[in-house]
Image 1 (cartoon, rainbow over the protein chains, first blue to last red):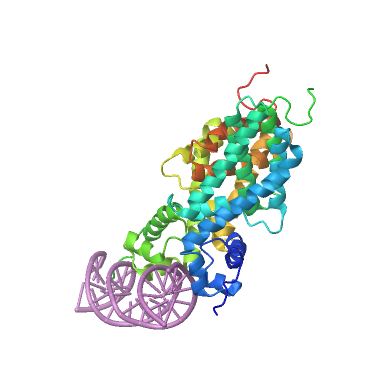
Image 2 (image 1 turned 60 degrees about the vertical axis):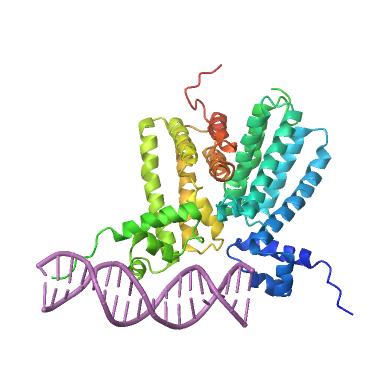
Length: 199
Length: 199
DNA sequence: GTCTATAGTGCGATAGAC
DNA sequence: GTCTATCGCACTATAGAC
């Protein structure tokens, strides 16, 4: 009889791709490298992912999915306190920047590596960032922000600055001001953002 | 006697390199493309720049130099008003993001494309961003900021967020909040940042 | 394995200043 | 014509996608 297809091959490729792409960047990693790392054959790799472009897109989609799960875990304990959820989210970002495993935000980085708006990995990256922005807006509405759209965009500025400066200048560069700056933005737009009594 | 060396060759290569690298990213542009665009011969190109890495570093250095000239012009009219200089600088960033010629910040982008801390183009990029941060700190001191280091880092967050979100999400995304957010930061740290009378 | 593209080298031909 | 900067092309070797 024929050999059964090994389960989890796709997952294994995705895991290796994630490690290599996020560390070294997409363009710096060849398909051969994926093959060497996973031990998977070329034919199988190309059966799972028709092209490198498609693999990149699948990696971004997969990371996006994982990210939302992690974000839900982080904000879960602050159910019913949208401002607290926003701060918890920022704290989550800040932690990830401090990790030795942080090599920059894959959504910003992949967009920066591929400028063609049609490039699948960029399309997925942009989608992720838009979703994040919209989530912040929704939380802003729940928190009673005077202008949730403005607040969401201002917070995206802080997040983008945190992630990108964190990669280039390190966690003790501008990144260290992410939490205070996010709180400043939150105070600007929300009636009683955090456990702050009026002065 | 002999043929004179054509003047401005190096400049011409640098100009073409700047156009292509900033638009498409460094890794996406081949040396052959530079040769085609400039009409320069391969041997001459490699005489001016011993390697692509060196060309990239020279391009970043050159752009850095140009940037500081432009920044001086922008802040010049606000001599003696350091808070005004900071706002003018932020306005300058915001304008560049709105330009149709904006393809993202070359310093953040190049750092994101090359993760090796030793890569010359990254070294130059990091240097540029550090200088910018230090300049903001110096302006903060002149403006009487309560904590100029914190303020400089917070402003770097806004700038990084502006430039990177501007490239990915467009000038009417989070980028539009750059000026209000910078003003918010400035008000937080400076006694009388802009023409703001106490309420 | 195949085919393409890349960085980088080197040489002969040519263009131009004297 | 002489001399040289520069171009254009052929070439290697490596790495890439598929």
